[in-house]
Image (cartoon, rainbow, N blue to C red):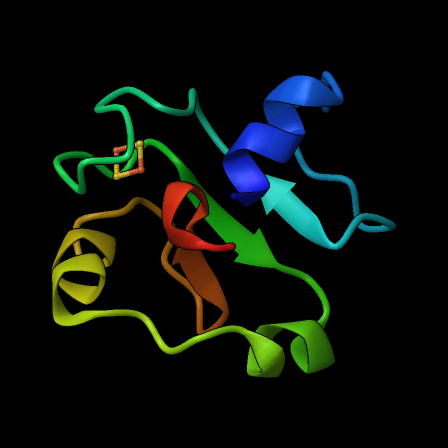
Length: 81
Ligand code: FES
């Protein structure tokens, strides 16, 4: 998943980088991708990329509703392949 890729590549996980595809917030992986938190909330900066992603499940949308600073291109990082 994107989250694992971020781990592997040691990507900066806090703050925003507008050159990046993702703006990553907070800590990640707090619930080990079991859709029980929203700490892996990411904002996809590239609309074309966002549109290529699989649609979020109802479970992901429910959890996204609880995420701080929700945007139209928000996803849960642990659910995005
Ligand atoms: Fe908890 Fe993604 S790590 S929902």
